[in-house]
Length: 70
Image (cartoon, rainbow, N blue to C red; front, side, top):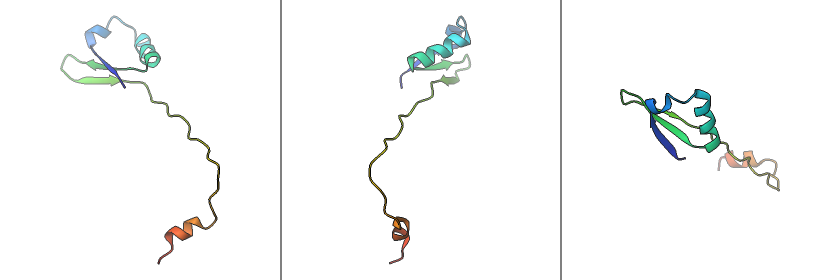
């Protein structure tokens, strides 16, 4: 994920709603550098694609076979 680095002063002119909407729309995080040098990251939540449904079956007793002592 690409992240932009901005100072707190650069963000003061923008509303919180504008900043959050920008992060969500661009899928790009913002690294905010505070006056004391600390950094805060604002980033969108990653969305995972759903897992595919696979054809086939699992035989009954598969678990017993794995844990059976030899």
